[in-house]
Image (cartoon, rainbow, N blue to C red):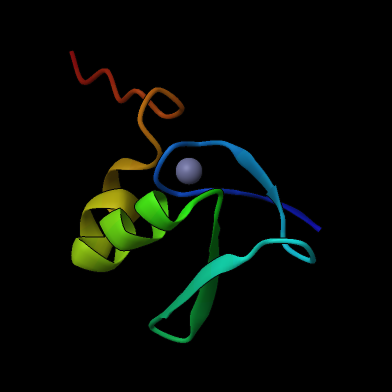
Length: 60
Ligand SMILES: [Zn+2]
């Protein structure tokens, strides 16, 4: 299954992904160790804001 790296927005194949993290019972996949680490350090940030550049929230 193709999933989106919550940190950078890159598409990752969950079957091939080497980097994954479980947060609140959900599995997240990452393109690199760097992204995994960033997510683990601040999961709430990425879950709220989404990957940088993907979900640019333009409030007003
Ligand atoms: Zn990434």
